[in-house]
Length: 289
Length: 262
Image (tube, rainbow over all chains, first blue to last red):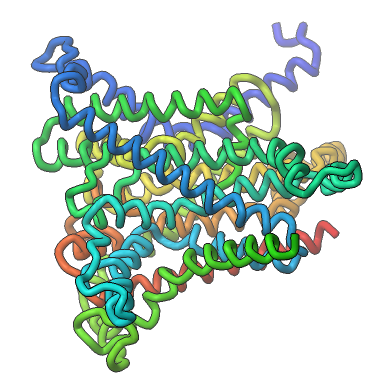
């Protein structure tokens, strides 16, 4: 049989086997520790006492805590994403337009926090924002306030720290996109009589939009799943979806509830990636990190 | 025009300061002699470093974290490099979707991953074990290694492999003698980032580590929930120093690539 095949087909088959062999260990690890449990969670979310049920999902309609938590989480994601665009766009813009030495320095200042532990950064904000923390004592010493401000153990503290932690995820894809915009184009716009603002709005901004999309998806999705920061800085007042999942397991041992919440959050995340992939390729979103 | 440019730069400068200050502020705090956190510290001391280095519990957790980070980084680098090589060998719809599957650890919200791993481990008895921690971190680091190595492979000219093989070297030797030396910087970058991501990993460890196999980050998180212990400032400073070191190594490594390219 094989003798009737020409050598290139044989070669193709051998190469196909090699490809599978090389991918197998990585696929086994990701399959066994991520794909299988995700399917398991999906299964558990529709089971109760050995039968099929939609009760775990029905709670989203009946139990206030569920939809309120999702609402608060999405609200947080919108605020954080908006803020990182406003803060990140100018940083990426200046870094992309600066001479090489400066852009390297600016990028270094973005990458260092990027690779610093989230836990460490959340802790730093705890020190800065607590009642007798550095910000409050500085403001009191300056005579700006009499009573310490309530900056932590609420939504504000969580938002500040989350923006701080996720800003690099916005700046890096933005910078990657802006850096590729040829300066000829903006110069051409200017030589044709466009004012700097006009050239920016009509030439630069549209070309930088893929970077905005990539950054927005990353920051939005990461905020939806944020756990450590709201747990440490939220003081129980900022209740995010991820905390709802962990509470249901750690305290109530409610696997059905935890599973249905996980699946709904996961569907939200996948939908966001799907929507974004209509605009830019998936690889481009993930390439940032 | 000049004024608006100046304002823009000032704004960006402020943002960069805001980005760095919270991380740097921990350093002086960790050398404070006081029990409460004040800035600037009323007097300097090394007592929190002493508290850290003489505590058996912190030392045990540090040992666990370092072991997990080093072993999972090495395993993830080997697996990830093999996978990236395979993904680069051919292009087909199946391989493209497999690549998306291998990126999933970065996409799935970390709490869901943690719950999933917990479920699996509870059933196969890997909870609170070293093996369990290492495997979970291998899974979480694979996307970094694969992304990094793929970038290196795209720059590599596959014709070189063909020349080597037509000269009679087999595939494996060709990979180690021809290909690997040229993609080495991206493999090292992948290794470094796998190491630091495993060292900093917290959420999955909260669910699956325990007993004598608690990671440093799990201990820190639990300690932070209860009270603000200045020992954590000392540990945070050390962790941050480690991150800085890794980023510097990675950038030196990248500069090495730029030179061989030019």
